[in-house]
Length: 326
Ligand SMILES: [Zn+2]
Ligand SMILES: [Zn+2]
Image (cartoon, rainbow, N blue to C red):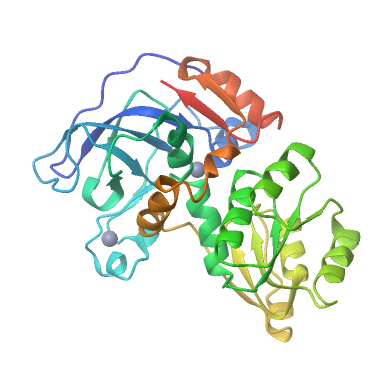
């Protein structure tokens, strides 16, 4: 990982916007190419979480303009295709992912369907929370929505990374009355409690499941948010759901699901990459009104030039999530 000078991005399509970033961050998923086992064959720009100020827009952009403070997600979407009109913006027929956002200037395709301007220039303390909406908070929200969390739900959150912690916050905001965070790390447990966790379960495996059942009338939780993606975490999530319960999957899958067991126990699964753009209006509003402060997941802040240290800190789990200032 290194920091180097590159050419400034320019408008390529009339639907593009150029953003001068105010804050960017490192995602857990950025660690996959960082680690040797799935390293790219040649150096390439990286990063997909950002907030910033619009520098310029293409001739076809109508909803954001130079000077606006904007939040956007890790996928671009046109906002107009039949899939987007159903709200499933992560699966836009003309959308996709992009990289290179750990930079001072970035080009965002499909600006109208991807970015949202905040009601004004944000106070400094809101910037980490707005940045968290670029991925982790919307992803945690998607896990909770996918698992059908509502008033009175009992919820288990598997994973205590930034997404899992965001899932705790989402479950609590959606009205869950029992929110069980599975975490062995004291600093992460602390954030989970601040985000509304009612119980912390530090044990894993059979012992952890036994504790979950004790807390849920002996049957398991109504809703389980799976925010890791490993085979072990996915099995844990299925086991922690009650018969007829629902599992929201947002961890990038690295293992199969026991589909027969899901069938015989009437457990449902939903989830996938979060349709960030669809959740942004509500969640920007909640951050703006200081109802939620998802930016608490950032426990280390560094200048962008020290990006290599940010990756090291997250890889070694010394930091939950690192915010970078250009
Ligand atoms: Zn991300
Ligand atoms: Zn679309």
